[in-house]
Image (cartoon, rainbow, N blue to C red; front, side, top):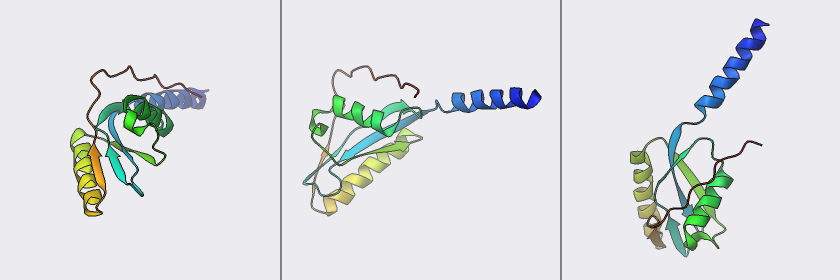
Length: 117
């Protein structure tokens, strides 16, 4: 009985800790261009899946709607995320690809709440 109760409390603790705040940005057309899109950082949690974040980015940034090569990067701090954006801009600029640093939308829609399977 103690083992069962301990397992339940451990599972509850792990689920609760998976809700940490993280930062994310997306990069579109990063393999072949011709225009590479880099989004600003957004605040999210570890509970959001890559598919959920891609759907959010495509909903918030019309430039990404037809992009098929979209990747999501996650960071523990805004400093790490901003450094990634700067590094990626320089990297793709050196490859002679046009880089568009997208701006945050003026009206941000309410992000969807992740659902459990």
